Image (cartoon, rainbow, N blue to C red; front, side, top):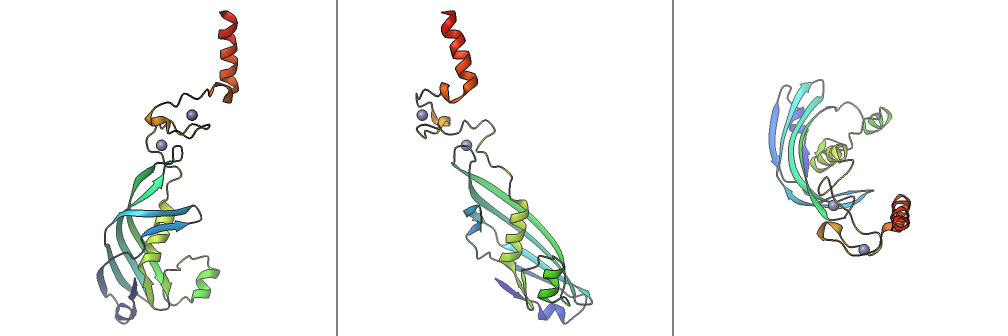
Length: 173
Ligand SMILES: [Zn+2]
Ligand SMILES: [Zn+2]
C-alpha cells in the first residue's frame, strides 16, 4: 500500500501515524515463494525531521511458512519486525542508487509499505530452518519422513564409515 508523504513533508516536526494492511500474501525471493500464515496490520509512524528528512518507524508481525531444511515440512516462522529508517527526500532515486542506499520503498513522494516490510524480512530471513533441532530428515532412498518412523531401507552403505563398522561386526561373528 502507498502512503502519500506530501502531507507530512509540508510541515516540519509533523508526525503522522497510520495502521496499514500488508497487501503481499507471501514472501517471494530467489529462494522461492513462502506464504504468510498470519499477518498483523503494520503500525506506521512517519516524522518530519526537517530539511526534507523523514524518519520512518514501523512495527510488523507476520508468520511465514518455510520448509524445514531437512524434511521439507512447513515450519511456522514468526517475524516480529521493528523498522526504523531515515530517508532524505532531497535525494533523487538515481542518487540513492549511487549511494547504494536501498530505499526502493520510496517512489516519488510515496512510501510503499509492502516494500519497506519486504526489505526488513529479507534482512531477518533465517540462515537455516529446522522443524526441530534433531530433525531426522527424509530417507535419501524412498523419501520417507524419518521423524514419523523408519522406512526399513538399508542405508548403511550410503555412509562409508558405517560400512567399515558393519564389516568389523561381520568378521567378529
Ligand atoms: Zn524437519
Ligand atoms: Zn527409505
